[in-house]
Structure formats: structure tokens, C-alpha cells
Amino acid sequence: MKITPIRNEKDYQNALNRLEEIFDAKKGTEQGDELEILSILIDRYENENFPIGMPDPIEAIKFRMEQMGMRQKDLAEVVGFKSRVSEILSKKRKLTLGMIRKLNSTLHIPTEVLVQDY
Image (tube, rainbow, N blue to C red; front, side):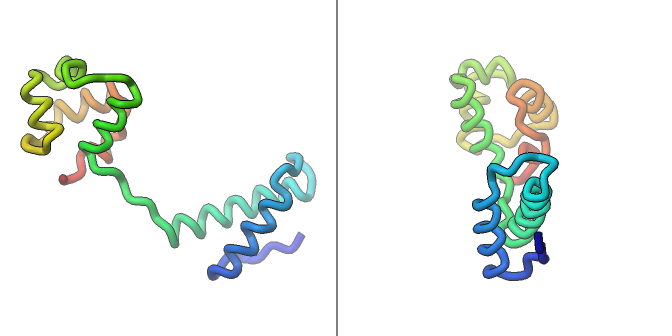
């Protein structure tokens, strides 16, 4: 097992190829340890070089509503009137702190997503 830092795209591709080769390695074996270390290095390289930004707050609400099978009238029970929900989803009304708290606890959307500007 010879593991080196991932410094560039070639190193990254080599690490991915090796990871694929040993993907089914058992924990506690030499290959299992190599798999774990490679996974950490690859994750670090990807986070530094291919960061994924947070979603738009309103798009996150719409996505979560879809996942949960909610309609606008269901969301009105969380944030207030049906007309208010319509204004929020069309980005005509900003989320208040109270709404953010309720959306976080009801829809389980992280507050750091909901507090972003949009």
C-alpha cells in the first residue's frame, strides 16, 4: 500500500481508479485500511476543488415540499396564510425569522440554507 497526497487531476484519477479496484475490501484488512484512507483523501480533494454551493432557499422549500407530498395549503399551516405562501414561493415576500424556525423544524431544511439572501 503506497498512498500519496492528491495534488492534481492525474493523482485524483489514479486514486479513483485504485478506489474502484479495492471497493469491496473488508474492514480491518490492509486493503480495507487503504480504502478508508483513499476515501478521505478523495473527499478532501473534491471538497477543495469541486465545492457544491448551498441551494436557493425557496428552491429548497419547493424540493422538500415535493419530497413530502405537500401542497401550498399544507405549507400555509406552517407559515401562515395561503396568500403568504404564494408570495414566498414566488419570491415576492422574504422569509421571517419565525418562518425560518418553523420551516426548519417542520421541513427539516437547515437554517443555513433558509437564511441566505435570494
